[in-house]
Image (cartoon, rainbow, N blue to C red; front, top):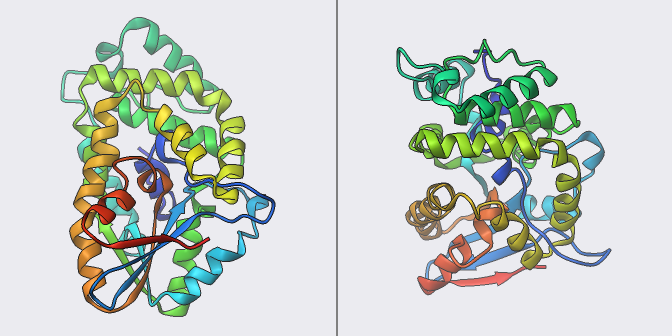
Length: 297
């Protein structure tokens, strides 16, 4: 398995379900953001993230820089500055490999394996090289290759852009979870669920370009309702994955977010916009705890 680059960690650990983020409406609109306050003196600035971007997607909307300038620290799903490539590779090898005696060809149905073999070759991946990969790892590897072929790259994503700025400025960088936490979301899926995930990836990879354009336009415009509809529709066939990937993680993040408020600092919290929309969103959970959550734009 090729060594993952630090800047590609987000691409590997989040599939097409969470590649994209927030949405809104007019030519003057900007990505949606929220201010969270409570009885403590701290403040959270919530911003939905786009994990993959192209060079032509820059410059970014001006409110992103404004939010960054207001914050004392940057908080992301992962502390990307604290990851090294060897550790990342080791984690994926440990979690994403089939048990001895099994192979991708033996755990997939013949039709899905044949399709995976054909589509993998189109993106320069010899499936024989991935013979020991679990299906979920093949799925996100193919999506990452497909996104790169379209000019989208995790190294140009919003997190990496802000990470470079924060590192240069000496601004504190924090993470809400570990890479192990993210990998476990996929590794706990059954083989049948993993095969369904792989099949959807194979069937939808060609339409990723149009889907990305639509979602990027929505993100730039801040159309939150449209974003929620677009992103949650992807999970209709994967309710268990949605529970693990979105709802469970949102709930786990709450304690950390409350602790940040208690410090009295101002934190820019950048997470995939999927976590900020819908009935089980971070925003809804924070409101249910009695905190004030006000849309900034």
